[in-house]
Image (tube, rainbow, N blue to C red):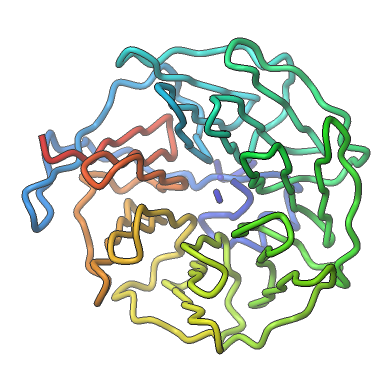
Length: 317
């Protein structure tokens, strides 16, 4: 998931408001705060600022094989290989809201106006999405299947090289998608909307909040988390969605982790939260800028991206 005041899909001053008003992935303005050189979290790890090749807002980050990719406003795509970050041309001009990478190193990025790009490990190339609707999130599987979600209930499915629309029974803006398999998906959107696919059909799920969820992530079909506005964190255990105490009222924009007892969430005002399997706790980021995307490569290597080209790396080294 994941916006500048005038421009991944959720506004740092109100996810639904800016998406509706601006029709784009948007960012929070705000004064930069000098990044601390090291911020310690419990077990000895620390957040380190990383030199960024861009000042554009970065919405999303993902990693596979030996490469890391982050995307953002003005069609920005930055890559890291051999410990060096660099820009790579995408061939488009609009904001890119999310990126997902396959284990083989291929990637898909989605963005404003129905933009979908594919990456073959070397170059980005456009794909025909068949829609002009803004796309806010994408998630895929190692077999090449993938799903993108966006404005006005848009859901697209990738089979081979073709994207096709999927009707799921809602017209609200959808901000996140995750699944344990192509036939077992969750999507989240405006007003606490959560839908689940199973046995070829889609159903609405009861949620304990009207707050907008911005991102969804899980370890299995019955262990799923969603994060969103006002510090909202929801957990699905296979029976029902329940609220978790986050300890913050900051809007949360993305969640990712390696195991059910090692999860990270990021959000407005430099917010970073860590879940240890029992409770969520704050992790000092060293910045007051909005943090919009998080990816945990390993327990001791986590990347966060955000406003003004911010890149942070958590490591125990």
